[in-house]
Length: 91
Image 1 (cartoon, helix red, strand yellow):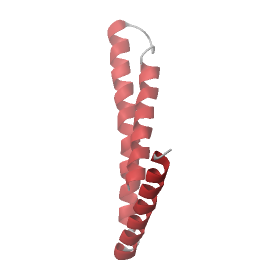
Image 2: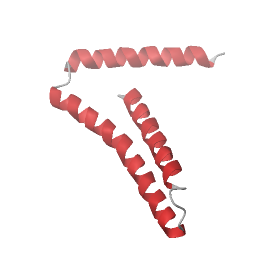
Image 3: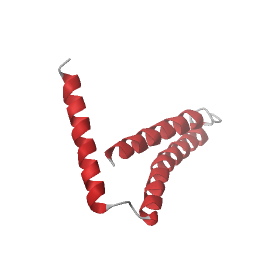
Image 4: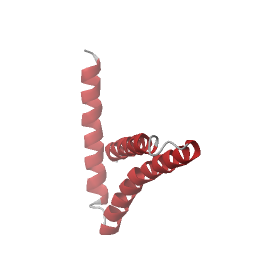
C-alpha cells in the first residue's frame, strides 16, 4: 500500500514539471508535431518489418510456408506498439 502514494506523488510532480516546461517553451511547432508523429510511426513500423523479414527468412530456409512469418510479425507489432507507448509516456 505504501507504493500507491509514491506513484501518485511522482505523477503529480511529473505533471507539474510538464506544465512548467510548456509555460516556458509554449506550444510545439507544426514541424515538431510532425516529427513526433514520424518517430512514433517508425517506432512501430521498424520492429514489425524486422519480425516479418526474419519470419520470411526462417520460412524460406526451412520450407514452412508462413509458419514463422505470422507470429514474428505480430511479435514485432507488439514490441513496436509497446515501445511507442513508452515513448509517449516519457514525452
